[in-house]
Length: 430
Image (cartoon, rainbow, N blue to C red; front, side):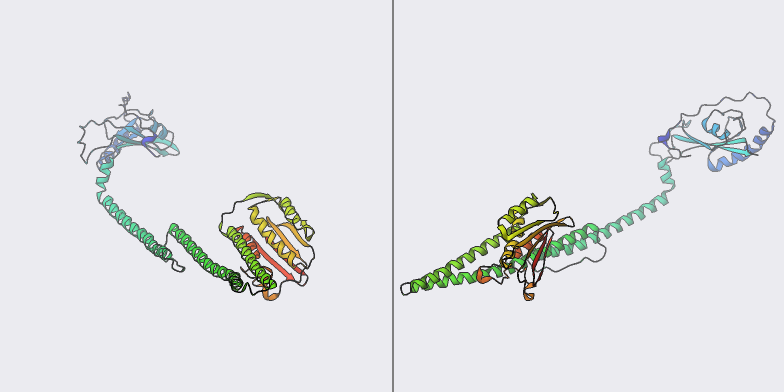
């Protein structure tokens, strides 16, 4: 049995009535008399009060003054007489003066009673009942002082060691992370870094996030630098043409014929139109790549019908069970599909372009097919590069397919193409 105060503490035991039996020479009394001396010697060693009871629950041997008392009504004795081990916790009433509050010998205020049955041929022939005052917690600590002190020293040493270990495990990688963050603040080039040794999971997660942030910033910086250089080059050509034409017109206007003036003005107008087209395409690409996507629920079939209707008979729409709707910025969707249709119509050799809408892996799949001569093998690797175009003399900016790829990437989708002598098909998945 497990005894706890929360399980209940019985009231203190009251003196039981003595038996009225006058003859005490039966077998149980003889056995009890022979055990008394043994119980007294045992009491000196374990400080426990012990009583031996007969099958009726009456005391036949004791270390106290209750010889002949019958206690069969006590819970633990009832269990023992029934053949089961019994134990209870009772309040203790001391007949000694209470020790001082600070005394290490202060006693407990509860007493433990246990009863153990004795069997012979399967029958309970006696009960051994013992009791002892529960030791006071403070006294228990005092008695086990050496052990408690050693345990405290070991616990303190372990606490210090564990604290130092974790302090080192956290501070060392944090110093590394701080150094990397300072390099990023100084706009230095990204360099991958890893933490060695034992690293807490939270610190490793911080390192991975910082690594990704550093890589993104580095990639963005390289992209901006490359983009700025390319834009500068693309804008420089028409601007140079405009300035040259204006200078010639300003210096030689009177000497020029009407045809020459018209030719130079036409060149200026063409270069200005190219600048306008470049600016428009650059703004379109910037909106796709940088601005947060304002998604809306777009009904796929009506949207594509309206878009295809702008091209009249040049575009034929085929619906192959596409998703009913998609969450996307409608301007981005119109820009991506419109650029694919514009390219297909320009290179389609006058044949109708097919816009097929279907589904693939839960995504919207759009396929644009033309019947043109196909893309030259030498150009296929660069087809999605910014400003790459084979129609610069006809006003091509080389940004249309870059915009398509940017829309696909912002949606976690893809764009690919197949091309041959019978035509080209671009497949956009969103």
